[in-house]
Every structure is written in structure tokens, then in C-alpha cells.
Image (tube, rainbow, N blue to C red; front, top):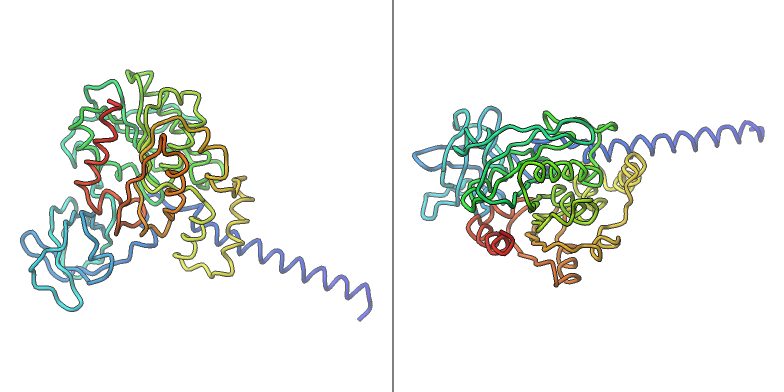
Length: 375
């Protein structure tokens, strides 16, 4: 082979390999950056309904079906709420019986394929909880953001912000509790959500840019009667709350933040999501590099930035060791680094953004104790 021809062949081969790597990286990063709101996270495996009786449902036995606490049960055309495993019920070798609290949509029939989900409800605060509420529009950076406003008697508002794979229906789990504490609540839909503007690149940024929609919600709350706000976020919504507490021009009006399963190291979370969706391990480093190139996000974990030192807002973290999407070790380190402001409440046997579901009563009591001085 002549030298010129050999060189051209080698260059073509290198370019071909490079193009393949770029394409592979884009594919691998898409599973996390283009997560559809309301689509179950990969940890939520499908179960089969085997039988239903008055107040009980029999499901395929699995680790998820045996989780403690209260959960949504979602499938095509059906949404229900299930409570704890029924002690003393006749359990088969391959099945488990849980308490059936309610069926909000459809009919729960034997053979139905369902998933446990942290979101108990699928409607709105009025239809599902009987709460007086308004659909409001918040002027945001990219356009109008829809939100539910549930009135209350206090001048401190709570702004709720959902996370990965969820919609503003997820924070409804807590609306009854917050309403009983007389907090006005603004339940936000942000960029990429149904009814909200799409980001220009069509990608999620793990809260790095989305926090500016939260900033718009804070501005709205202060304009319409709030004296201060408390931000309660889940997953990337928790990350948004943290960024707002240190970056927002209105940060002095944020009297507290609650971080449920915060994403404090997005490359780790992206790799976990991609791996759970079946992306081969060899492609995971490419996925992180592709995500960085497509979004401009820094791969530096939050704890290695100026954020921990810049925080001046009382903070409650609710997180646990069973979270495989956003590992809780950074949360432990964050709390250890800032014991003057940050307290950590550990929750066992709870997957990502499901700390309330594992033990609702304990979660709400922990939250009540945190909120009381901020009222």
C-alpha cells in the first residue's frame, strides 16, 4: 500500500471510530437527558396483579412489592394507592398481599401490569385531595410556567419542585400535610414539563439551568403575598432548591430548603440511569462526556464547588442508603461539612425520591419539626 493511501485509510478509520464514539455517547446520554416527565425510573419494575378483594391487592412477589410504606400503583389506564404489606394474609410463594387504599382511575383487574410509584395521585389537588386551589401562570425565563396554588393562612409559602421521572403530581403527596400546617403552597411545573416551555436543546440539565424557573416561582410568590418562602424539592428539584438558595437574587427571602434525595453529583446519576436503562458499561464514560458537551454542565460534584460554603439557609436533607440513582454519601458529607445549617434524616428501604413513601408518618413529623421555627 502506498504511504499516501495508507495514511488516508488510517485517517478515515480514526474518523469513523470517532464518529461512532460520538454517536454512542449521544445515545447513552439521551436516556438521562431526555427523561420523560411521568415516565417511571428504571428502578420501578413491572408487577402483575394476581387478585383483588375488599381492601387488598395481591401482587407478584419482588423486592419492590415488599417495600414498607404507602405507594401509588400505576399501569395503563389505572392508578391506585396501596398501603403496607398485610400481616397474616395468605401469601403465596410468588405473591404478596398489600392493603388497597383506593383506586383513583380505571379498574384494578387480575392480569394488569403495574408499577409501584412514589406519586400517589394523578389528577389535581381538587379532584384527588378535595383542596381549594387555583391554576396559576408564572412568567419564566423561557415562557409561562403552570403551577397549582393551594391557599393557606401564613405569609410563608412553600414551593414544591418535583424531580426526575416525575411531574407536579408527585408533591401532592404532601399537600394535605402542608395545608394542615396552614402553609400556602405553590406546586411548580418547570421547563420540559407538560404545559411548560421546552428548553432550546430539548435536554434536562439536572437542575443546573432549571433552577431559574424556581427563581421565577419565588418572585411570583413574593409578588402575590409571601413574605418568605420555603422550597421543598425532590431529586433534581432538590438540586434546584440548593442552587436557588445560593444563586438567586432573592435568596435572602428563602427561609428554609428541604432536599429529598438531592442529585449532588450528576455524572454519577447519569451513569446510574443509563446503566439501569441497559446502556453497556463501556459506553457510560462516553455518556458523561457527551452530556457535558451537549449541555455545557461542569462535571464537578456540587460538594467540590463553592455551594456548600455559600449556603446560609437552614436545610433539611431526607435521604437513604438504598437510593441507587443519587447515592446518599454526598448528602452525608454535606451534612457533616455544614452542621451549623444542614441536618440529615436517614430513611432506610426507600428508593430514589421516595423517602416519604417508606414511612409517611415519620417523614411528616421530621418535616414538622424542621418547619415549626420557620413558620
